[in-house]
Image 1: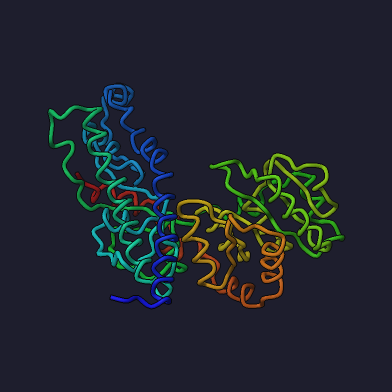
Image 2 (image 1 turned 135 degrees about the vertical axis):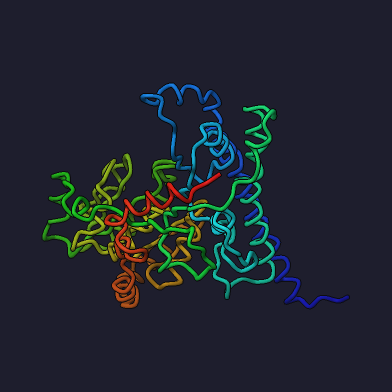
Length: 389
């Protein structure tokens, strides 16, 4: 069979692109194994039982989806009911634990951050791999780990968990439609609004953002989880050079420090910032972020246009969500040149769609499931009755 040049190019591109997906998944694996096994350190559950007052028993356990089996075994040994909570929004994990069907070829995974209509045949193959990769890692791999810690004398401890309630740090109004069951409760953006808006701002930050020299300010804050926002020297210089080209915009840069030659009047460096409060400030114009789940939700809630620079995990799908909803743009961490950075800021500032769309997408505080704060007693009572082994 003779392949056309176009088809050969498509195959080569697909192989190169998806080998990168596989590499990212394998790089993440050692870290994943480390934290999924962490709850197994509680193999002496008598310590927990003895700490309970007046002989009371543990009635309810809240389990992170990233450590299912080890934590489930702990809950079972304590004879405790349990529910799940997911900080990382992985559709396959959520569907697996709540009993919902999932189209594994077209539903975006953490590995292939593309919308269904953008996916090629190779994307869909990689997407299937991505979903099953995380199912094996989060649901199957922990079983032998738990058996190693607890022994295999009681097989009842290791039986598959039944579907139960799952509280997800997500916002379904900006996600793609997926099949859902009543077991999935979205709790993204449940911050106390009054606390966010009244949180004290450091005097130096306040003086900078209130300055008449600037029409507004942009927040630049990368992940505190991976490398605490540190950047390579060249990339740091690229950002600094671009920021200097926007003298009427102040840039609040959350980073430990930058070289003196990169400093400027419109650049202010802080080791820590009250991020949610700054996002909701009337002079805030945009945020440059890694698009971690919390930063992403906080920006959308504040109606703040997003420049996403994803580097791992859920950051890629979140950046894609921002692009798809036209509330932000994305930059590749491997192509942070002065040109790409300048174009992204320019697009955010000049494109009326991003600002208009952000006004349409602020997250209601619990509004998709009713007011969570008012109904918290209802939910607590509900999962106390329904969460079961």
